[in-house]
Length: 178
Length: 103
Image (cartoon, rainbow over all chains, first blue to last red):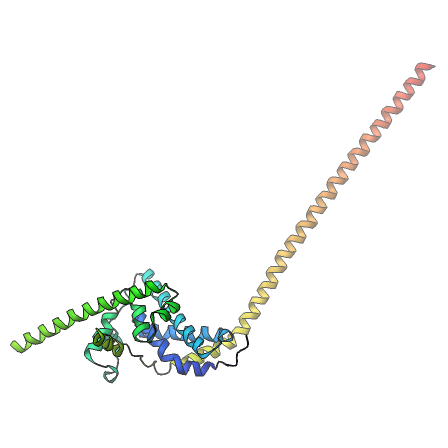
């Protein structure tokens, strides 16, 4: 089928670099590695540009390849026996103006402690605003599995956030008492 | 629950890509594009050499088998020629012996 849309590589990079980088960073927790993954994803897009049919297809393709490459990177690190997750903010020093709130920053860190499949589902749901059906298509996973990951991941993250808040309040009360 | 989801949505907003990512990416892309024809030529040359070596090996083996076959055929023919000559001699002797007995 003929299609009129002509992909412009530079424009695609401009439009989607933030998405690809954020997905890779949230999946791997390593800013340097996320940049490498983002570059690899775009170079692969360059090689497959002829197969891309529409702007929406490009976006879907980039999301899927970014998630796959991140999963590959995590697997390689696990094989090497390295502990991938580092404190994102401490190591890579995100500027203060980029942080929404202390709770948001903490939520991002807590997300990093979730199992990979749950993290992937939550990142695609809440960063990319995808529906469970779209997440299933992106991850090539059954819809029921995605729904289960979303539900369990959200529940676990909420429980961890509540614990964190309790500790925060206790510490504050203690400091005020002193 | 919705408040928590809103907070999570806010926490997971897309982060801006590192400055210079696009520049570094375009440099890599340019480098790969100039490198690609060289790699293609190298692969093509390696394939031709490999095909020539394999093809040469097959041809050499065929020629060698044919040469051995021809040598074996010549040996068989020589053996047959020797046998034929011996039989002829034996036949001549028997014929001479028969004639002497009749006389």
